[in-house]
Image 1: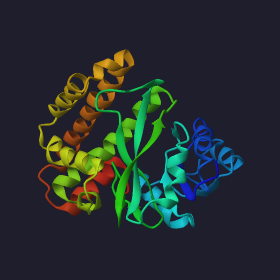
Image 2 (image 1 turned 90 degrees about the vertical axis):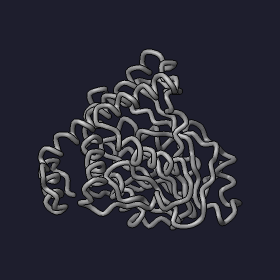
Image 3 (image 1 turned 180 degrees about the vertical axis):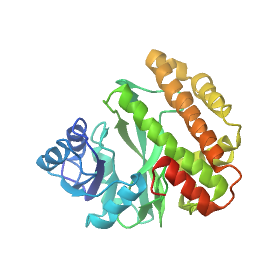
Image 4 (image 1 turned 90 degrees about the horizontal axis):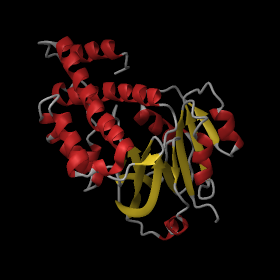
Length: 303
């Protein structure tokens, strides 16, 4: 298949385990592969370049900043842009979808794909985990990334999105210890977002809320207007039972229980614990500038 007129953007940091699989899955449909690397110390850069990717390097702040930096500095000239993580890959080449990019009506400026999550080598089919709908392909210049510490999305600045039959597989092969460390970091950023919703110590990028109806928008509204309003430590229990019982997560068997418990209960409880800890540091303080200083000092993040 001839490559489509689409650039694929990949973020990396020490991804030598994953980068070859990722690039090989998209190299036949991409006219340009751009790796934005955070100064990896392993063979990530050499592997990416050997597979034909362009590599740019930029110091890491968060996902949103890094993606937008890539869009602003990679000199992308293709008609379309696609974002994929290094530990993800296209399950198969959906040739017809990419062939038809040039024939889509002008009003279609984004494509919503399905994300398939693997845990310990097993596809998580149940528990409201598949499909996860996410906008990952957009017309060059029509999309930008939300400026958020966590749960950032590509937001269309014009036009509308269309759902397509493309599966991106998220299958990280690092250890469980690595997975726990990653989610500990995520929990800190999630805590920042929750407390910012309450104390408003940083500007909030509400572009997704202002966008048209999308699965990501609906999910965020439920999270911010319902879940985050529930009592801490109670809400993770509700969420776990919703996923594991009502959404049939138990059908994912032993590894499924581990995933739904760790990602649906343990992780959400860790977020709440970090919220409780931070609230005690904030105390009676109501000054947004001081709250921001306290949280920046506590987390080590450049807020």
